[in-house]
Length: 344
Image (cartoon, rainbow, N blue to C red; front, top):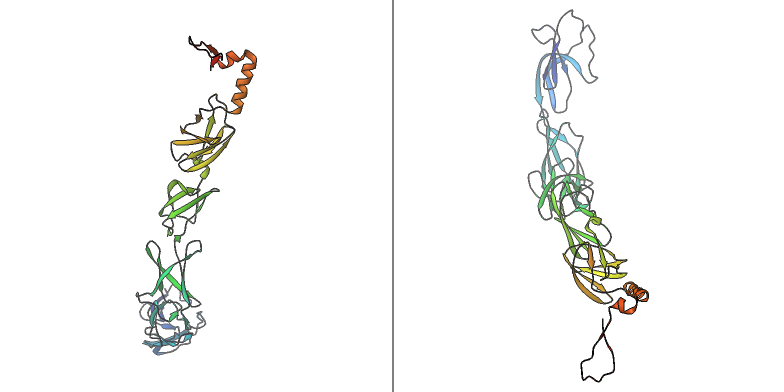
């Protein structure tokens, strides 16, 4: 529009906007047809200059008066009923739905829906953050009422999940099933072979504190406080300590077992990898157990075959008397026994 330096301003009156060219009064209005709203007191105006508006808009003049009417919205799907928009000018729009089952809903839309879709209630599901199923305790509507036979798309529902605590989550309808996606997880512990784990609580919010207990062959060996997440990685190799086991001469035991707090560990070549859940242990060799204090090197009061061979080699080199520290014991007077006694 060319009017020299004239200022053009627009004002909204419901679905009517008037354009002010003179600054004194509205020159004409732009009329936008809307369901549920009639405009009276205006007529179409065709100016001698061309104005560009959206295809469904027309220019009118007069004194507009807005008449608001209720709008009926079709109810489709598996449950019959009626739906009404009482005030089409309200934003968001409030659609009141009443089903033949007696259930009533008030839905909110920012646009006028073509229809309201209903379903027979087929169930309810709640999922963890990584998609696992959770136990559903109850389903309610926005006002806290229990859900009946039918559900409506677009309505607000809530699902209650009961584990060690009760949780409430908003839900939506999909094909007759009320679905909720939560920030809960069932932490799964990844540990080494022969290790098992237990998490308490079994279901928790992401990032909350959980207790993780690690078991080795059924025996508790560690306890941690972790932040809840779908997967908890535990480095079980850090639980083990290496112990060297030797005989009285310092020779490594070739094959043995160590018992620590009810756990059994095998050792070979003088070395065993154990989980030190106690400061005492029992070393078993050739069916005999020796109680020891755990330390980096444990000496057992026994001799291995290798140690005996060392002694035999020493005897062959320097003589039996030196190797074994032999001496002849003098017989007491009056003793008639002809045998020699040797002390080792």
